[in-house]
Length: 130
Image 1 (cartoon, rainbow, N blue to C red):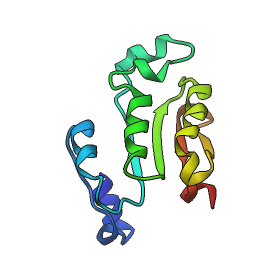
Image 2 (image 1 turned 90 degrees about the horizontal axis):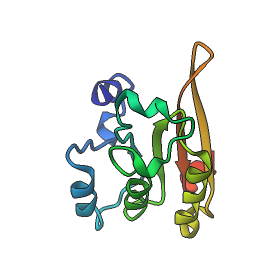
Image 3 (image 1 turned 180 degrees about the vertical axis):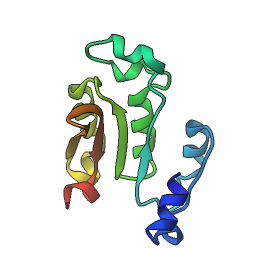
């Protein structure tokens, strides 16, 4: 779907899509020039909704560890997270990027028909400039 959308919008030639186990792939990117990393870690199936506030470290993939690993290869990270994610945890992770983006974090609520569906959190100087 992402490849298709990139082609539709004429930017496919600017994007390299990499698939695989995140923690294996991310370790191979250290010497490459990575503009940004987009994450959408598995939330844990429908059970994630049982928590009023979801500790992002206890998803199927530790969300905090994934964001931290992504910051090792790019100062610019976007993460698509569950709607009930602990926003304080997401904001606190901004300190990981203090060297590149001044620790700036933007949390965007994703609404569909007026209902909160997810949050996207942006870290780093690329997002701070917007």
